[in-house]
Length: 292
Image (cartoon, rainbow, N blue to C red; front, side, top):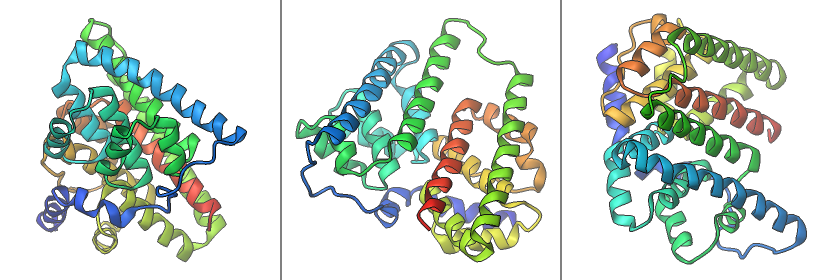
């Protein structure tokens, strides 16, 4: 069973970018944004958040280097690091603009080249967010979470201890409790069938795996709760994208707080980055449930 699951992930790693258009959300990408007052406010909100992230990215580039930056971006987006590196080299963009473009494209579910073209056409990120119909709160969660990871990285490079193992495991414990609680709420509100469809679609969007692969894996991992299953797929996507080696599923211990901490630490991926992915998943599920 472990070998079969690993093969699923290995096949998915290098295909994720090609599959991205399959997950594309409805956008107004071919329309010019309405410059009305309310939309102008939204544009300004996005531009403000992007400016803050850009400043931190440029500081981090000088502190931890571009290779580490792209490694972390790969883990955050679930896109293989080799593809991230190739796209960056081919983009001709500064690191901050490239990273924001990748985070925008991941949130919208569109190819990164599409966002890069908009940037190269001198549109502001606020205008691009409006064209892509990006939800501000969810996008802000993705941007702010990654920014906080980079701030921690800068501090660590300066010799500052940002979190002890005990504190990190406590945070992972809280996150697992939260995802299980939220999923139980979604199940009660939506009913089993509607929840399962939404759950599988969101996992496919966040990990790049095809829905039939996810269903097959879920049928094999019957000892996991839906929250634990989601955590395993997100953990595997985070790690396998960055280090290009998938996790083997060896039972529930893989998705205990201590198990998650161990795998992330071994892969040199900050736990805060994975916590951000859990938060994004639960908030996206909340948005999805509101539209059912």
